[in-house]
Image (cartoon, rainbow, N blue to C red; front, side, top):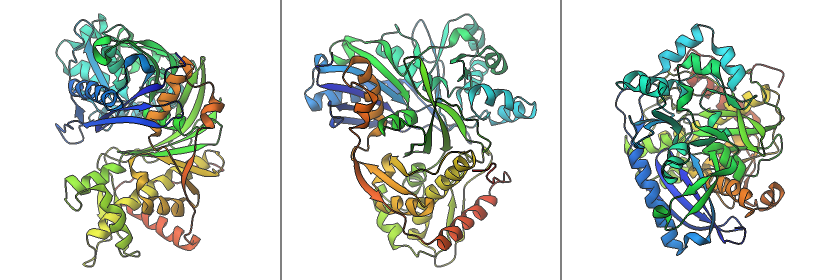
Length: 504
């Protein structure tokens, strides 16, 4: 199958489903995308309709193939990358979900998580999973569905129901129910998986009250996951790569060596630094996670998760109407008064790392009568860089070396003003790659490794090319002053004060 010209990547994200066809050089041949509905049934609750996700996924697959004029026989393999932690429970017999998907942003189980922490379970959970006990992850979402859908818990214990993150649900559907599996990166985000033993953990299953009978098989990130049915693509195609979106992006950025770091700026912002074979335990509320698993051997990463990045721009556009498109933000930020002192703390769904405060709520601070649309837009963009600075400070305190450069990807990186401010605030070079579709590209690389479409990690690393370099230009005095203003703003919306712990 190595002689076939294409790899198909399914990139199922938080707000849209996409399919991208890549060639052997990692270049985009065709792309199709469809947005889908976001549901907010209560304060802090976020849901998706799994059937709408499935319909949009099938549509974009077929759309990308039609655009390229590609036949199924020309596709070496399919890779699936997905919004992580988002939870689906479905019937094994019918394949139908028993409830809407509960999205990673959802906070409905925050009180449950607080109770578990108060009861002293935090250290055990972090020791096994590398995760902070939080509603962000899948475990308490599964339990909520089992407790709130009539008869679901009994059915789950009888093995009649299946759990999966979005990758597992799509895999089930693509293979006609023949494959119930996930990869180690997605499993590592459930709060049910021991990242050291690389297996589901009975103590965690008991703590979170999740029946083992519901769980998918955990495989390598590059592996045989099954065959996509003929009626979807027009012919059978093997599925040989799966990874959560942030790990896929790190793979697409060729962050294969310890110390290499990438950050993806999408709905949220997620920074991963490769720590190699060592699962570094964080003292600064970062997450220890599986970066990828190949040939049964896991590579690990430290991750910082920011809940709101591009979502703040979406808020500017859709809720408050300050812009009509994201592309307007670059010019507006450049035109804003640079010393306005306006800060946005985008805690719309709480604060992620390193604060982990589910009860914090967003605030716009420092406004005067001179503050206008441009200053608010600028503050929204700046908040992304400030949050990234928090993550970098935490990583440094946990003992990771200062990076030579930060590799960036995601929809926000086209904004040159933001990338320059990011370099200034981090005092680090920022590298934007020629191929910015690194999430989809990463899972295409994983799928292609299994079929021989790509020969090795070294060959993949050799394909990475830089499109733009942003070099710090801000004075240290200004950097310190601006970051101090951010820290003061955050202190006004949360009492969870964070300062770096460790030698750095």
